[in-house]
Image (cartoon, rainbow, N blue to C red; front, side, top):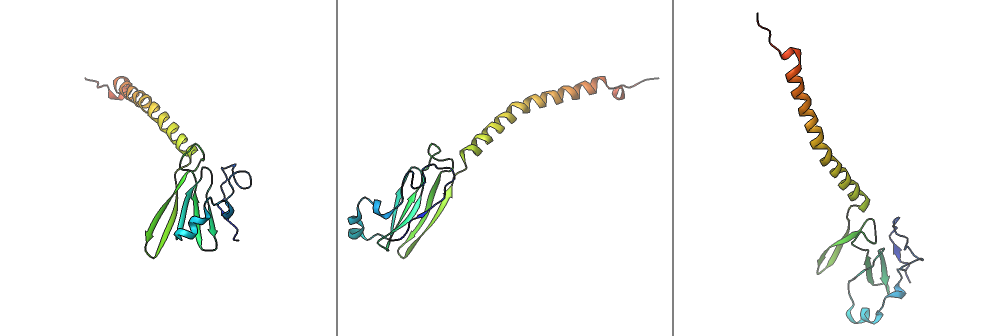
Length: 139
């Protein structure tokens, strides 16, 4: 029996052995593996992802949640499949805290920009009207 390979997730409190256990003994229908003999089994889980090799020939990859409700860093798998093989890449969305900080800073900038613009225009007009350099003296 191969040891399952767990992906380390610093944000999830549901790492084994506290939550989902990524183990080949927990595959719900082992008979399906014998019937279909798949090259790859993809499954989903709400908290963490892992990779397990069933019967030393069937690879199962569990994909973690794709929303910010369960994880701060949701991800998905981008796959490329051909008759002779497959290739998988794990792709991450930005962390929720980063997106919230970006929204807050953008909102603050959009509120401050008109205020700064008005103050700059007011200061420029005041300088043009009242500066002694701009007044012309005639003889």
